[in-house]
Amino acid sequence: MQIYSKKTGILAAGLAAVLVFSSCAGRGPVQGQADSASSKETEVTASGTSAGSDTGPVSSGTVHSAVDFEHELDEYEPHKDHYNFYFTYKTVHPWWDAVALGMEEAQRQFLDKGITITYEYMAPEGVSAEDQTERLLAAAQKDYDVIGVDVADEEVISPVLDELIDEGTKVMTFSSSDASEDCKRIAYVGNTHNYQDGADLTEALCQKLDYKGQVAILVGSVGAPCHEDRARGAADTIAKYDGMEIVAVEYDMDSVDLAYDLTLKILEDNPDLDGIVCCNMSNPVGAARAITEKKSDAVIVGMDHDEEALRYLHDGGIYCLGVQDCYSIGFDTIQVAVKIADGNVPGALFPEKTDEITTVIYQEDAALMLELLYGDIL
Image (cartoon, rainbow, N blue to C red):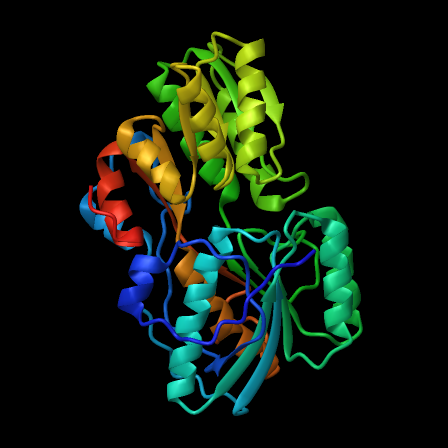
């Protein structure tokens, strides 16, 4: 069953800064505008993160730069005055609502130029490569200028995208999960450094534990490229240290409740657990709930900006979080989609992969991040 709502308003950037990570069920067709240009070149470190795990807590300046709400369209002149896109992603979740707000800001700016963009932005309630395949094949039968997808399962979805490209459909990927390296998709906008994100967070954990301890990994969804890559980065980092040991690897399917249940079971099986690496936005919350309930001393590192996770970070229940810039992902996705719709290919106008940053934040940064993203003043 699919749950979605129709977005009819355009949020101002200031309001978006407060509401950008609020939860809602999903989105249906959206009216607005488009200019297909890529206004910002993101600068990141070699690892792709703006604050690494061995640097300690980041400064307030870094917290403010973790999510960039200041975007302007570039000078590209679209070929049409109306574009119609289809976007689908892994599952209904606040993370993609944040991406959607970046899309809406680009849409608003396009409208100011007299260019209308309509798009569908939908996902299932649970991650399913089969569901995503059905959505993509159905969308290909309609008159969309570009189809965009956050890949649910690299092995399953990449051949589907190749098939659509061969049939003449313009396809891009976006968000946090690209297709396979040999996929024919035209371009990708999002996190290109998930492996390094997992490695950076795990290095922070290992350092915190003085490079000795038993660690569990909560991966996320089976086959999801971003989750699997982060888990590989975590495992490879732990393997560097003789005193570190992985005692459990579990898939929580991007569910807070399942992550909670899995963490309770891991703690039951490993009462001396020292740490947990969480590879998506949901599982740090579920893990923290379980760790708190059982009064365990296990150290949690994880991904993203869930409000509850940030509160655990503030209170010391989570050690650090890697925050992705969802707003920029959404804004840049719309710009690249317009250029693709006009028949452009990666090159001077846009890269094959538009990279967006991840910023690792710590306890002392939590209050400022909560204020920045949610308007919460602690």
